[in-house]
Image (tube, rainbow, N blue to C red; front, side):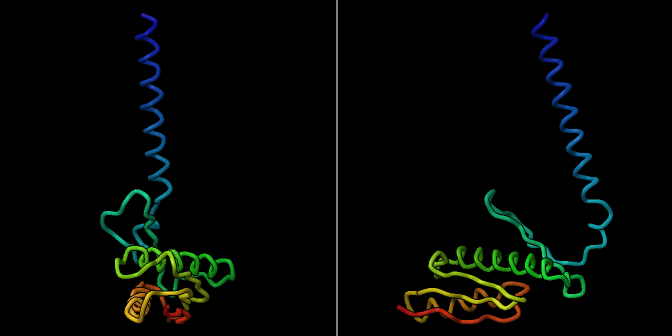
Length: 137
């Protein structure tokens, strides 16, 4: 009898926990999701891949801290795109971003890899321009 009471109690706690998490998730989303006009990367992503959302220019933060966060997110998006491209050795390329200007720094195996890395970076949404600081081995 004790085992059944214990199991029933654990089930109640588990159900209550799931219900609470669901409510918190819904509350955190709120109505602002319905009016959000930014863009989001959609589709199936691996478990270790982050989905980054960016806001349109009119909604971008004006503070230094806000710009730093936007630049960090953009750096992550560009680095992820470089790592995902089979023609680019993304680990050998450092990415730095300042006010939407992405700098690619590092060594690449040839002109083809350099051109591809620059193209990949330019095609990431939110990149205003790309500074080529890549050296060809």
